Image (cartoon, rainbow, N blue to C red; front, top):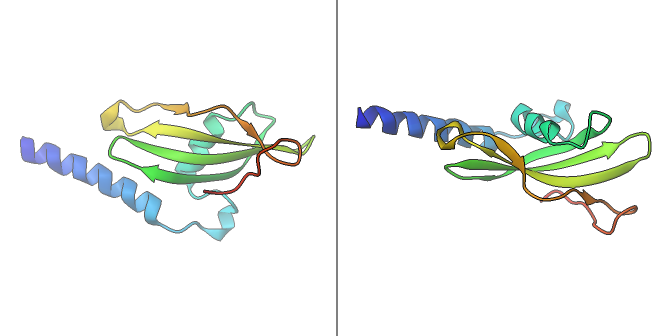
Length: 114
């Protein structure tokens, strides 16, 4: 029983590691993968905003941290934010790590991919 549990945990960690290690497909523009796009989209301001960039930046045994950028096309403003998604064995769920940061030129932050 204990060996089976360890095998399941290692399998989940290996799957998450492969997800982060694989290169982004150029056809996806600035979306690293479907997971990062899903979690970034889940925490955008509202459906009028478009997720322009999503990428996993931290992987631990209990969570994945994503870097996200969104744009409001009608006005042309852009924000950056971070989302944390817990892996299922740690309870799952996702939440936004901090407030949205308005990108320069309308804001004071120069948004860059980490």
